[in-house]
Image (cartoon, rainbow, N blue to C red):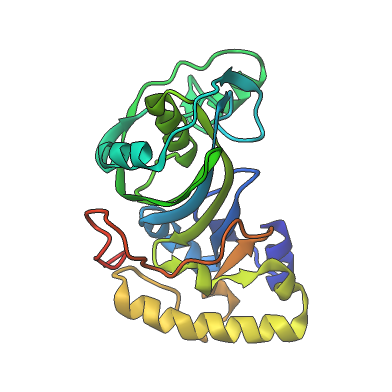
Length: 261
């Protein structure tokens, strides 16, 4: 955010949802008056591609945490597939201890880092689709489409517990936020170069016309300057798998409807 504010000489900027430290993927950012659209984007559906490592549960529910439980069991693909329907729809989900949820004014992750055990309650979340993309003995790759407030780390934790083998997220990539897809994103290093920045912004502004036509929110107006401009940048690390199309063939109930329609 600080880098982009300097690049665009923007006095005000906002983003539509933080990413976990190990996560990659897209981050929609708005400048000036366009920051008024951020709540609408945050409420939109999100899509993730993630890898679950079986056999170990951690205190953070991802690879950055300390080992909390272990098992020698490993699930078969058929066992995983049999569980997935129970994770689709509006379900109760217990947030991870390391989360930004506030407890008596303090973030849960601050309490956890201080050695306290945050007392969290299950919250209703909506998962539109959860698909198994590949399965190996020690890990499996999934794709999820979900609503606001859903923790992918909690999905991995609960899958591992239900399978009796434990699990944690070892790789996570956000591929969509609201009307913005991974293919809409501009790599952050490209915005440091003036020529690449100009080309990227032309592509962004052209894409905004489609966003305005297909999504019923007050989207920034193309050509009106940085004060009402938004962009979607990508936090980059090597991909865990080749990029997926916006909608892939799937057996999930909502897989045949276009995301966000």
